[in-house]
Length: 156
Figure 1 (cartoon, rainbow, N blue to C red):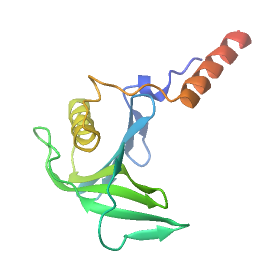
Figure 2 (cartoon, rainbow, N blue to C red; figure 1 turned 45 degrees about the horizontal axis):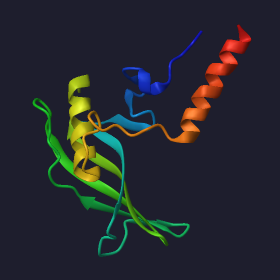
Figure 3 (cartoon, rainbow, N blue to C red; figure 1 turned 90 degrees about the vertical axis):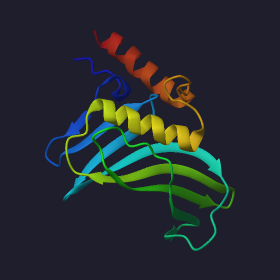
Figure 4 (cartoon, one colour; figure 1 turned 180 degrees about the horizontal axis):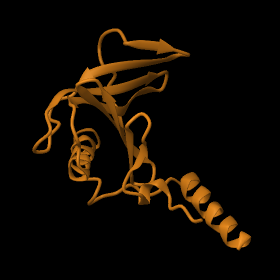
């Protein structure tokens, strides 16, 4: 049975835990995790950024993580975003924004709201609209999908 890449599926659900996973631009992910009366929304982003002042929240193996309040995330209608944080990874080479983490009121989050959250986070951090200027597939990801497709054809 052929299973399309995750980025071509509307959502991937871990039913037992209620975790929902959405894929964008082949290799970017948005995850919704129930947490009591809230949900945590984790959004993959990437941008080189200035290192923030102050001590990191976590430090391990020469890398440091900073959690910085993020302004300007546009909550879609019907969704109450209570907190927005930008995760910044600091290494010897510099700092990179790698994740947006939102806390929102619990409840159903529609596909349209997911798309709006992803668009807003990418626009704020990367200064682009992911649907008008999508990222190309990284060469390794493209090669893996190509190899899987070739192997399926050979098995038939």
